[in-house]
Image (cartoon, rainbow, N blue to C red; front, top):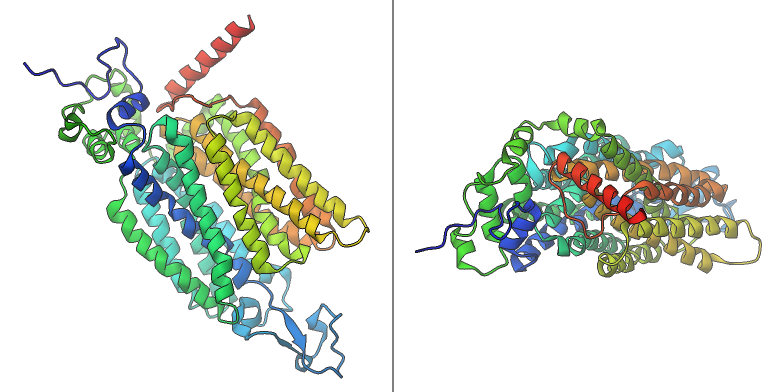
Length: 527
């Protein structure tokens, strides 16, 4: 007589049902080749995300120039070409190398020069607010990732044909609006496809993708030096369109999200595809029941999940006091990280280094940050690591300000070293906070919580260009404030619970029960 089919969400060796996390992992395995390929493909979206985030460092830069007549009033010591006759100077390269020189914006105000970059980050903010809950509610992780990449790719291609700064700024806004949820969807989708043992390491894969994208920009810009800035946008748009096709046909939806939404048959189908355990029962569906009727919390979970919409997800987050406290803390920390993360690359020109080399060095800082997080993520306390990284970034940034106020000769190399340490700390803190946020919130609101944290990070990016511009006259307004902000705001992590090694919850009630059990355990230890 054949053995009875084992239900998906029960454990035959236990009288109490296991969590969805444990049950899925027991049937498909913690990590296999199918899961690796899925996570790698999803994480590759970070390449295109990074390219559009930092592309303006090269396309919107002010090119170098030279005097055309040695006998004229033009001298190398003059830094403001706006006081010189147009016949006395000339750009070193063709005017088409930058939007500043092509459209004659060298004498325009700082608002006009910074409008495209500001529009991009404003688009990121609005896009994140509008689109963030769609991945949790109606569209799901995969469809949201596909649509975001598609909008970003199309707007990038259209940017090639911009006739003036105003159209260019509008297209950069649309570009930022589209890319707002790429990082969030990629991170959540890749980590929800693997077991908890590998979740931290897989989460780092998306950060490696972002690093590769950032690192590719200086190389592409250097190869394009002397040519039109429009070519750089074309080079980054075509691969993004190809990637959209791959996402549409080869990426799987999150089985956890499908289950929470009540789409059980689709969830089981996905589990079969990504199963890393070579079992006949798994492939045939014998071990994975087509019915979830044996799950005790099925009725409670299905009703709220099927009625979730764009607004109720955020409402759930703010109605629960513990959730609002956690969300406020991670957003405050992310804002401080964002000031340094986006501000340091923009402030490289203030340190008087080659733009290609300095950008490449900053991109390379993502590598040790990702490696340290990758190998230590399972050993480090989330809370303590976050506080440590933000403190290191704050101290390094403040030291740059202190050095610029010391008249002790040339210390540019030391400033660059401190800048790299500060940027490295911000990268590491960002990596750790994203993993921390995944573990702090349940499945039903996880994507929205991470999206809000990333929105706070982008908000720091909105303020960074203004602070960098003010810091050209007084470094306190850039490096000084960067350091104080990331260091002090990082202390908000003190009030958050430690999550290393804990199970992911799927509902708000589960998270509350786990939190109560943790508090009881702590009280028992103290007693």
